[in-house]
Length: 97
Image (cartoon, rainbow, N blue to C red):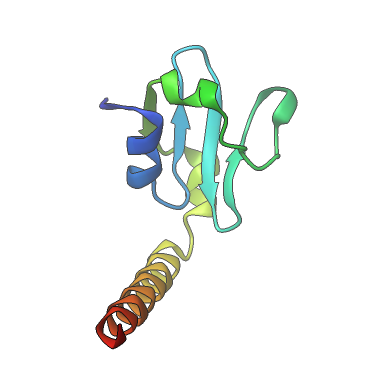
């Protein structure tokens, strides 16, 4: 498995996938965002804090995460469209200056 820094993991993880640190902390990307799936923060949205940036993460899918992956393609298409729209708005705004 490939290891990612926190920032790289955020860019690579797809809806329905999980990422785990060597010490066993696990997050899953859902349509609601990145959530903890174990420990005392189980079910809570991940708050980006400095200690997360020193961890290495491995991305994977399991039976639980595959259930969340339903609708992944539609969700990712919508994300791309939103990014494209924002880019076009910025590009047009910069031309007007």
